[in-house]
Amino acid sequence: MSKRIARALRNVAMAVGIFAASTANAVFITDFGVDTETRHYAIGSGSTVSYTPGFLGGTPGTYAVSGKFDAELSHYWWKYFLDGDPTGSLGTFVSESKWLRFTNAAVVGSSTPISPPDFKFPTYSVEVIGDALRGDNHPCTNPFPPDTFCSGGVLSLASLTGRISLGDIAVSGFQPTGFFGFEGFSYNINAAVVPSAVPLPTTTSLLALGAGLLGWCVRRRKAR
Image 1 (cartoon, one colour):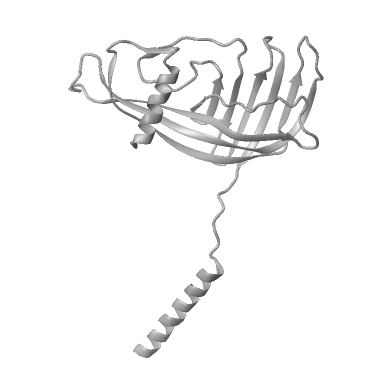
Image 2 (tube, rainbow, N blue to C red; image 1 turned 180 degrees about the vertical axis):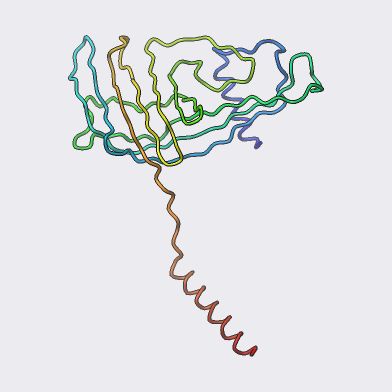
């Protein structure tokens, strides 16, 4: 594991230390790391965002949306010895989990911008279990080392569920905009992976390849 990843994980541990704590001497962590893959998505047809206003007013509505976003898929793992076995005589155990985080989201109305314009695509951690997605913005919905307990809370809970495959993703959720549970944005987003562009050879590369083949043919004729 690189020093950069180790440093990042230590920073995460410091950040979540406010609301997470490990049981004293519960396990002995021997190694840890995270493997991350980023996928790029384009939002497909049938995707919508609906707004439900609160007591202070607002205009309700459902909007067809398009746009794009990235998803960081991360595999977290910890290797550890059991409590009372500091040398690992009983064996090395592994705790692991998979998580997703959305980044670089750009969601717009298909015909006009979303109104009100303060809809934000979820940025909290989402757990990946098989092909199912589930997550919320509760401070305890995060990857934690084994034998760690967490406590905390938020005034308005945002949440989502969904499914993911190699080629597409579908999520549904609610993003509150106030202190009341009914006020905010409901969304249903379907998106497909955007294939990575394969660079075409440049004209110079093609000329060099042709010249190389020509030279090989000339050498073959001389050898006969």
